[in-house]
Structure formats: structure tokens, C-alpha cells
Length: 272
Ligand SMILES: [Zn+2]
Ligand SMILES: [Zn+2]
Image (cartoon, rainbow, N blue to C red; front, side, top):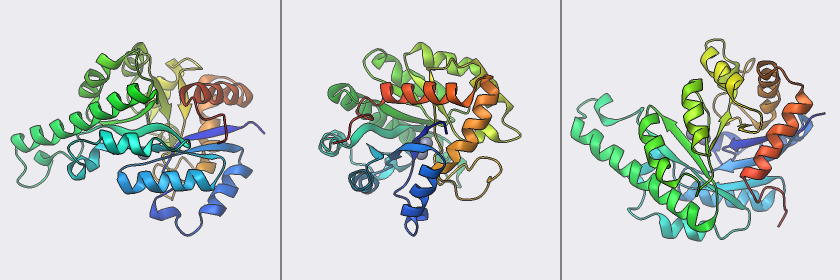
């Protein structure tokens, strides 16, 4: 059975509180041999570390999701450095920019509110990138409705920091701009949705070796589980569609995506 990794899961979320050991057993049965559990704030960073210390094939990323920027301290860097001391921490994130729920889209929100909202996210994103360079860790990058600003933030760090634009849902032109900065993209279950031809076209244009697979579970369950709780085992369904799109065998896709992930997350190989 070809092995795959889930490079982006939220195993610390309440959706998995009741049955995580069974979820991990199903992942193993499906050939999903390594999982990176991703944080979204201080508390979930600590939970990610605890899970990575408990389960040998689970690794942790620590950081603050842009949607939680309002609650984040002004200077996150000391906390990131402290969390990253744990040898099971292999990346920072998820960080990035998310303008989808910007204040002007809510009742009473103004353009000035938007500007403050974006500025705080941009500041926190830059802090993640700075600490990533300092510690030699890659960044897991989230972007929604913010592609231009996200690329502009990463640009000055190009060549100094590894990064992946996760849950890649843009077109092939955007993918090429990201790859040109020395970064990667990763694809999630929305690759399998009927209305996602643009994402499949982007994947078709992405060279093997430049992308990884992920679930972003408990969100974005692939077909035929769309709308249900997602879990790492479903990388299998994502990999089947990805292999079709790439016109390669599952073995080739397994070798390419696992090697890419091992290289990207430098500490994914060793146990500690
Ligand atoms: Zn995300
Ligand atoms: Zn996520």
C-alpha cells in the first residue's frame, strides 16, 4: 500500500476529543504514516506539542492563525521561540492572512476597521517569518482573500525561509508565483469537489516535488465524505484524485509527496 502523509491536520480540535486513537488507527490502516498537527493559537500550540509527544507519528506546528490575530499579543516572538524549543515542533503555523471575515463585511464595520484588522495580521505574519528564519523552521501559510498581500509579505524572506501555501485553492498562475519564491503549495480535500476544476488545473500544472497533500481536518472532507467530519485517513481519497490529475501512479505520487514533505519539514524523519 503506498504511504502518504497528512501535512496539515488539526488533531487538537474538540471534534477529535472523543476518539482520537481510533482516528489515528484508521489513518494507519489507510497508509497515512505521518501527520503534522497544526496550531491556531497559544493553547492549541501547547495541545499540538502534547499530541506530538504522545503519538510517535504525529509532529507539531506552533503558531497563530490570522483569524485569531485580534487575541494575539503584540509581540508573539518570545512565545514562538519558547514553544519551538520542543524537538517535536517541526514548523511554525499556521500563520498568514485571512481577509474573508474582514470587519467591513460585518454590520457596522468600516474601512478603517479593515485597515487595523489587516495591519495586525500582517504584523503577526511577519513575526512568524522572522522567527522561522531565526530558528531555521518552515512556515505553514494560510491565505484567504489575501493573495497579493500574502505574497508581498513573503517576498522579502524568499530564499531565507521555507513555506507552504496550504489548502491551495487558487489558479495555476498564482501557484507559479508562489513556486518562484522558493515555496511549495499543498492540496486538500477541496481538490475532489465537482466545482473545483480550477484547483485540479493548478495541480496539473504543479510539478511533482513542489506540492504536498493534506486534509486540514476536521474541515474540507473530500468526496465522497464532503460535509462530514474530515480525518487524516481521507488523504487516501485525496491522493487518488491527485494521481489521476497528475497522470501518475499512486506509488509515484507517494514517493514524490513524502520526499517533498521530508525535505520541507526537515525534522519529520527523526524520532526524538
Ligand atoms: Zn488554513
Ligand atoms: Zn488549517
